[in-house]
Length: 322
Image (cartoon, rainbow, N blue to C red; front, top):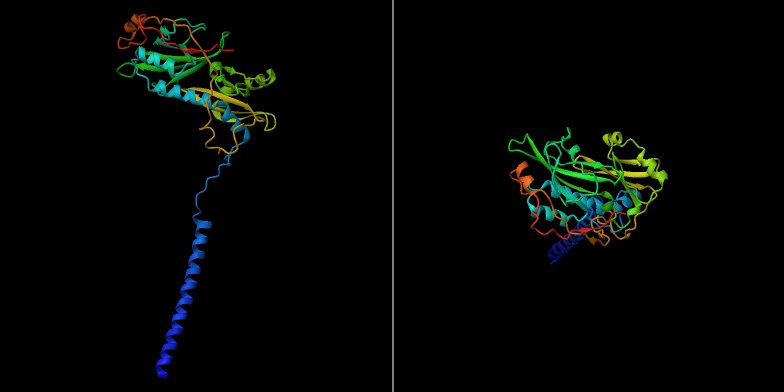
């Protein structure tokens, strides 16, 4: 009996020891998991108030030109994906998708106008700078340039059409627009400037001194070396960044004192994507008839480029440039 009691007590002692060790093991495991999730594998969190690693004026510029930049990228994709033998439906589709376009045209290999839509264009149409390809580009890449004339600025974007050997240029499909009309589609068109190496395309509501300061920069040299920067200083200077349309750099400029107006609940990565586009009301443009479908078939036999006079012109939205 005494021996049995000794064995029973020994078993009880072993059981208590095992329980203590088991509890200690559980505590240690909890501590280890807590340290792991705190320092090594922290759970992902979403801070809706974070604005990212951006300066305030960068956010302000992104907000100001979001509509313009989105529209330009849509135009670039549409031109890049255009059929090299576009028909009348493509022309009408382009004018409907991009109501801010001045028109669409076809030129021959020398830049001579073959046909255009609409027929009457008040500015001097000139696509000859687009005939020669940029040495820094492939021959088939989009080409663009900014024209400055007394009638106002105009940006030309061209998709080159080559022959079957991809060596002989047959012509250019050209879309063109006034950047001032595009600028007025934003919520605050006076808050920024647009320019290219040719000069200021849109001056917003900036003073003549500010415009002169920005325009006086050697943009050809600057854009060769940089894609963004500050003119002047961070207290009263101007922040700029670049977007390329084809081989044309379009420079967005805003004062470093500018501040964004988006809600602080939006993160910096989402406010641009969720920014509501709001274009001012437009008035319909009077119908006009295109010209030259016969001439096109002679110059580029495969092309059925513009609608014939029998096809009614679309009701293209249009608004006069201020």
